[in-house]
Length: 354
Image 1 (cartoon, one colour):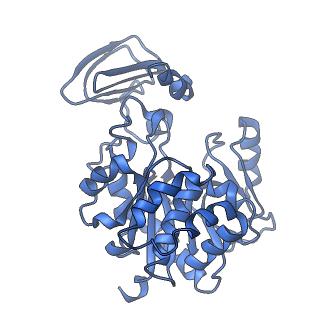
Image 2 (cartoon, one colour):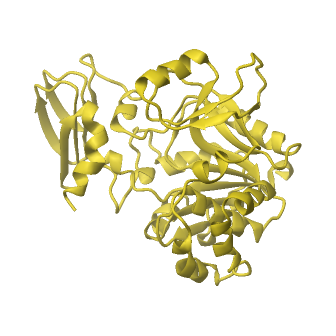
């Protein structure tokens, strides 16, 4: 335990996963669901993935205040003060800064890994090796800002990419040349063919000093907000300060606010069976299918369906007939039927229900 006592893990768990509607809703979002049928929610699997390298007392979950009880239900090993509650969503930069200021009040020599709460990892042993490698790199490069890059298995248009120098070297840790936004298909094909582009997993590793220096340099507006309450962090007054001032932070991602600007960015190219499972289509690639290519969960009779995702909640019965490349999902009195390749419109469509 001695070598990991200063390791901290920030789990970002404030999203609602609207692309997984109707399974993921405001009152019970994706990170608390067992969409893959593994017996564990996404957030529980995330915690277990990092527990070999981070002590229980050093986990922090940053989430919407409405989900605090759910976090403690799924992660009962955490204390209440390990759940940091945002009064509103302000993207990943304010979320990470909030947690960093909290950690600063507890451990000024902290090493920090930041992770989404809702990704899939198939090879946990290789994942642990990569995270340990990242922490080890920080012991010699305290100002490094690292992200885990995933070796692409296909020309994916739903992920951002990380470009590294194309010089033939294969170091375990690579300097980042540039971050690339989500490409169109033709550009994604080019990225995969060139071999020096990796998917951006959204998993970051840095020291407390490294990220605090970056916030001061690149996000002064956010620093100014949290500096007003510097003595409130780690005290009973912390939540009141956050409630009053968090919404003063600009809505900005850590990628755009820091990583794309800093000259100290590095990546570890990795291959541990990662997917962000951000859409029904990505779920389809990771679950078992019947002989007609249908991924079915629930009490369903399928007749002459092909290449469909059919997900029906427990206690419900359904008969589905004659569909090809369709998504059918039902939960909590809400039904979705659409062409699977049109799933990117789900967020737009459900706005009409509001």
